Image 1: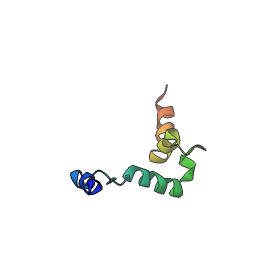
Image 2: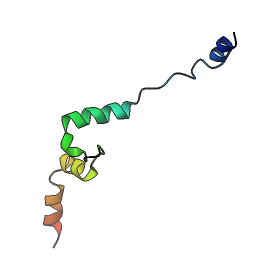
Image 3: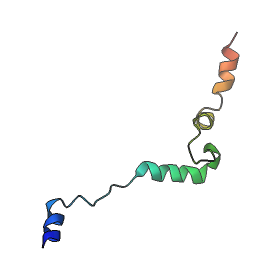
Length: 64
């Protein structure tokens, strides 16, 4: 009986929410593995190259 009482006190205690960020990162690793380090961490500089590949060229032309 005591176990039933414990479980009924907080029914949400054992519920875990879905980790959407983890799922998105796993999908991104499969689609674009070169954006990640050997440790599996996101390489921000590589991501920036994908987001705006011409940014570096524009910055070079603006320097005088």
